[in-house]
Length: 256
Image (cartoon, rainbow, N blue to C red; front, top):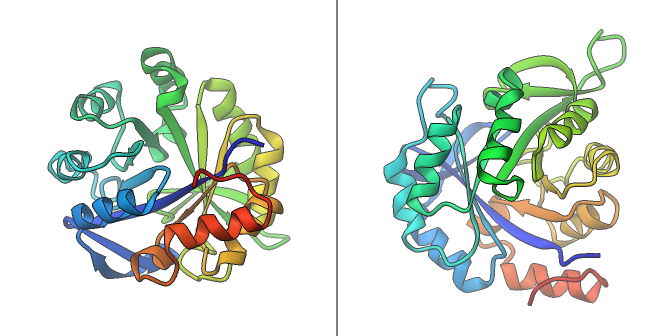
């Protein structure tokens, strides 16, 4: 097993890191630059920055917010939100971003995945997939892809979409359960494992981490290659080093 990555996520709205539950009821958490510096010091393996209202507000990623964070990060840095073209990606790479993450744009135009992978290399391309569970008899896939910050269903089967994005050239998948997001009740292990077992590229578990045990379960049960969390890190409930030490003691390889 490769070393499991611990990834704090900066959900940014109006220039501030925010955190909500099920993608709504957002509350202020901290300044993104200060957060990025702290997480790099504490040993984060990567940082993810999501301009969470860019797509909903039909605009591009706020480059000025990204640049401020980019100037201080010392670990691989991925950015998502409002990226819908090769040109958008190039602007971010020009700022020094290591990876771009596309979600809604990938669903609307799957060929963008292939184009980006060929243009920049698959190691620079993350496809973010947001999913929700539907009840039996709904006429929708049990695990369905949602877009536009979880506000719009697609009718796409989540596992089939994950296979397709790998085939098109995605380097990794960032998988978030809309239902679990911000609940601190644990990752959606069924969703995570279903995707991780269906593809050969790395899958990052996201949405719902509330305890050290949840991080372990994301890897041991969910088969994730990386675990992403926000609330528990932003509000000081768990430190990066605590997370790494706990996983190491449980036999999970991590970079200490």
